[in-house]
Amino acid sequence: MSPELAELYRLGLTETDQKQTFKPQKGSSASRWTTFKRLSSLIYLRIVYRKAAVIDDPLPENWRDLQTGVQRIFRNVGLLADVEVDLETPRGSVNVDVHAIDVRSVDKIRYIVECKNWGSAVPQSVVHSFTTVMHETGANIGFIISKHGLQQGAKRYTQNTNIVGMTYLEFQQRYFEAWWKRYFCPRIGDAADNPLQYTL
Image (cartoon, rainbow, N blue to C red; front, side, top):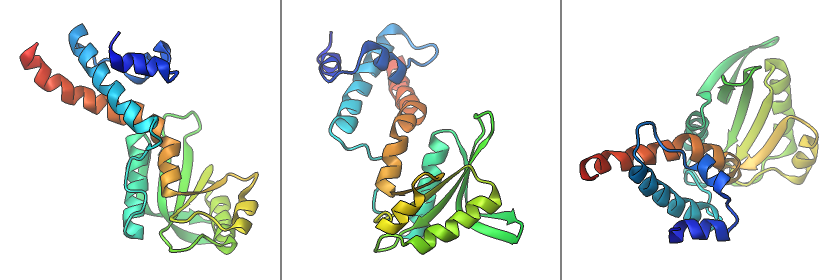
């Protein structure tokens, strides 16, 4: 057993977990798969077990960077996502920061995201307005993503609702495992496979 895989066992990542996380690419030889698995194991250890599950800069410079970052992560995990989307409501059109659809889900789950790159926590009044948007657009899940999270009153208001307030870092941690399996591993596998085909 390689030192990297031994470390995975020591940290409690089982063989089943490893196979689910590090899937070989179609047509890869056993030796290529072994090399890819060792490389992935090292990176996974460094990112996850050192508590640094970060996909993007957790403190974007402006609201536009925050929006596009959320959109990119949604797309990386397999959702259809767009920014600055106009949605129809009974009272007319409303513009949302990020709109995403999980096309692989049976009910085509819809997400609406409000991005607030403010220097302070988001107040309850913003949550009230966002609740109206959620109700009138028929979205399934709503995220309010901000630099400093929600104020206490806003947090209490969102309890037992389909609205979740979080920082951009918490959003990345929420989707890190899906991002790792669906986006990062396939790409690092392809990157490792290209030079190996000339050396193996």
